[in-house]
Amino acid sequence: MKFPTILFSIIASLISFAAYPSAVQPNPKREFRGAWLHVIGQSQWQNKSTSQAKQYIIDQFDKLVDAGCNAVIFQVRPTADALYESDLEPWSAWLTGKRGKAPSPMWDPMAFAIEEAHKRGMEFHAWLNPYRVTSSPKDVLPSSHAAKKEPYRFVKFNGQTFFDPAYQENRDFICEVIDDITKRYDVDAIHIDDYFYPYPAAGKKFDADQDSYAKFGNGMNKGDWRRHNVDLLIEQIHKTIKSRKPWVRFGVSPFGIWRNKSCDPRGSHSSGLQNYDDLYADVLLWAKKGWIDYMAPQLYWNLDTKAAPSRSLAKWWSDNANGVDVYIGQDVKRTMDVADPRNNDRNELDTKVRLSRELPNVQGNVWWHGYWVTGNYKGAADSLALKYQSTIALPPAYGSENVRPKAPDGLHLEKRNGKVFLSWHAPDVNKKPDASDAVRFVVYQFYKGEKTDIEDPQTIIALTPCTSVLLADDGDELKGHRFYVTSLDRMNRESSPAVYTVK
Image 1 (cartoon, helix red, strand yellow):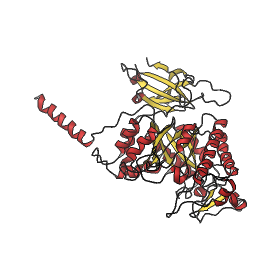
Image 2: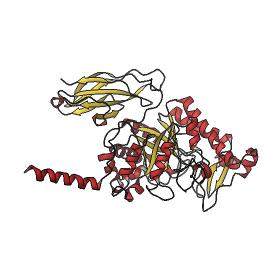
Image 3: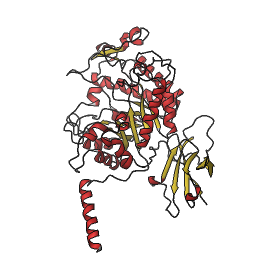
Image 4: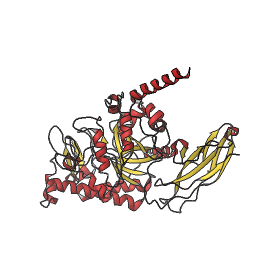
């Protein structure tokens, strides 16, 4: 009588395997799981009161955490403006409806967002667009703006205004903005996007810098000269951040093609727009020089898009990481809209996550855009929460492996209002903020008789800045359970564990 049952189980397994033949690798303990939340083009921000906007941030962050994300890349400077209190640039029209108009009642969106992200154990990456000043011809700049007072420092193209990358004054100002943010806010990273020299428009390439080229070009090939201008900014940003707070990372999310193989044997099998030739961004050089800490190439295409197949481009970026972390920028909508014919799946999510975990120099994904995740577009958030990001992941560690934070101590159980908490004492931090300061804690739980393995992410029950976690309503059910608690420092390096066994 057992044979039919066994046969039925085998058939059911084969059917399941046919539907999902390429099972994704187990969730890793360490993985970057970010999401971009942009403000530009998002009218919902300016239509909300202060209290509504705060609640909106809370709701978005809660949904990202529920989907397993451990980092938010939040846009704080879309068009040479500010979603934070700044003496250098005006309040953003994308926040208040008018450039320079302060929110009322007054609040600081970036400060609030940092606090809420850190409460949830998430990293906060402050996202800036370096060169863009206006996004359309309708944008109005105040008479006090540098583009009005010193127009020679700016260029116009396709109805937009940009800082001219050729001017040292502009590089200095952009770095002054970044230094101000790094100094005053507890950011985990500074993040810039793919806009360097302007994208080509309506079949014509950017050529609005004739005056600055005549002034500074010194006979260089114009493409090399433009790339050099951008290189100078990237190097200066790196130095600015690291001289202020060495633990703050610097990340770039470039357009997804560096160069096509038809132009350079080192390039990818693609035929689209190129960072190097069209945006004058030599991202590989920045990685090789150590000027950036991570790259998040925007591979927003489908797996087998002819001009830019993300299936092969992901491997190309892994092969060309040049010693820095690579996180793949994934377009949620395109991923969920198209089936992957190679594994008979109804969308591309399984394949894309599996690729990111198989490639040796890829350490995670960034979801574009975060609103598609929080809106659960075609079940994307459900799939992340239930399968692909179902365990808590620690972000990748940086810095010297020989440096580790101090471990917590004094683990004990506490009862509060009839509920049982595990509590501990945080280690002392340095008098001045330091990379090795313990800023978050990882809590592992092992059942009675369960093998202890803190490399198993399924045993992680919390990643938190707090010094206690809720365990249960009744302590009796915890008898024999073992808890390990470790510290994470500002560079995500993990301490040795402190251990507590419930008697």
